[in-house]
Amino acid sequence: MSQYPPPGEYPQPGQYPQPGQYPQPGQYPPGQPAYWQESPKTKGLAITALVFGILGFLGSLTVIGGYFFGVLAIIIGLVALFKARAGTAGGTGMAVTGLILGVLGLVAATLIAIVGYSFFVDSGGKDFMDCLSKAGSDQAAIEQCEREWNQRMQDQYDTTLTPAPAPAPR
Image (cartoon, rainbow, N blue to C red; front, side, top):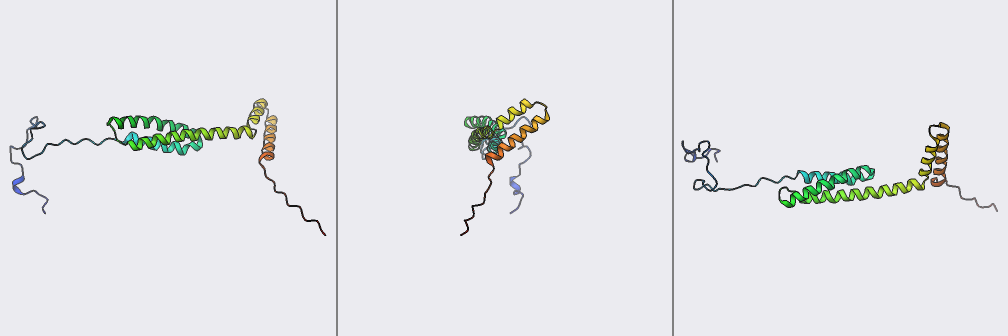
């Protein structure tokens, strides 16, 4: 098979359209079907929403990352979804997935923040912060606050294994 067309299929001089004289739609020469090709729909916003959704879900462990990337994923995901539904863009599935992951990231970050704050209050962190604010710039008072808080943490969370009592000799 040759890469060149047979000699009779080359356009003859005068068959090329002159500049400004290109055929209009529907006026193509016989034998050449007129077709219209739709340009591919962009998926950039949907991909961005998906990436931010994944980052928001994974970043929820840092709470701030979950909020930041989660909100971005929701906003961009909604824009991408509306554009996809309008037919001006593609990637509906990626937009929906990014939107869902963004919401999950926000929910997870909120739950982690609530649990973390309750742990902070239960472990005496609020009392420690009050002690530090009363101490001001007095270094001895700050050190006393640290000692008290460390002692409270050891008393509350430290596990000391005591040996089992030895049986009485007979």
